Image (cartoon, each protein chain N blue to C red):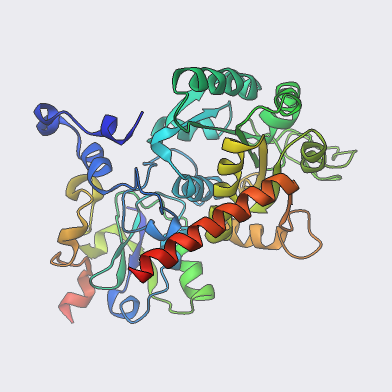
Length: 296
Length: 103
């Protein structure tokens, strides 16, 4: 799909809903320099959804949708969980996979897109919760990294199964007592970022969504590296305010606390030398372009 | 009745922080008018989570956003009816508190 495919046939213009016309007229499809700075003055690629008031996951969704390098050439693969409540409201092609199968589905999709559009950059982004990525779909997640499949895996880590009432998940912190896990977790949080690094990911980052500029940089890098070099993995902390017993306005502060020095979501990233060289090269090209345009 | 966020445009226009537009969990709910340099709320999309209030009070320290009853606003901006038309925002009649009008 390209930008021209999003345009409405003129004869249908008068019967299309306003929301769709807004997307065509005021969205950021096709802009190479799109980012979170456009938020607030352009139509976002995500509409009214049914997540709870103040859910940090919806902040993360907004930031990710605003930072994708080329949404019109992106396909997202989702899985079961709260994210699947948002995907119907997202103006990017997306597939809902069976619980845990998201990386296997994305593998097939990416290969098919490469065959169908050999001369185009088609991005595939997997976006699933921690249950789908680490517990139920760990097999598919790891195998896709072992094979070096070129797509981005984003894990929304809320440290439990929030959608079903608060059961224990592999990414839950040790000792945490949830509503449906009253004994408390007995083993450590699974170190998936380190596992990803060892499994062949070219770029791995752990972050929260409390800084849009950081999310933008990380998501852009992850998608661009996945295009050229190899699999990338992002783990984003999106606390479930209901399950950890917070008020709707406290989600942001919770994320800031979790990313303080020494806490479990302190920003850290791992990048292979090859991927770093690619990013440096791209930054140098961009700078040269800027200088050239300034000189003109 | 229910609460929605309301931006005091006279305070907001003196700053250009845009923090509330970045951290609102709902898409296209806090909009930013680049001409008048002020944020404003699409009341039909606001879920009243109060994140914007705590950001405006604690992070930005402007205290321009308050939670008020939906019935207390005159001509609230509804995105589903008005559509996303940045070109018209400059000439738009701003949502106002009914109490402000009387005084």
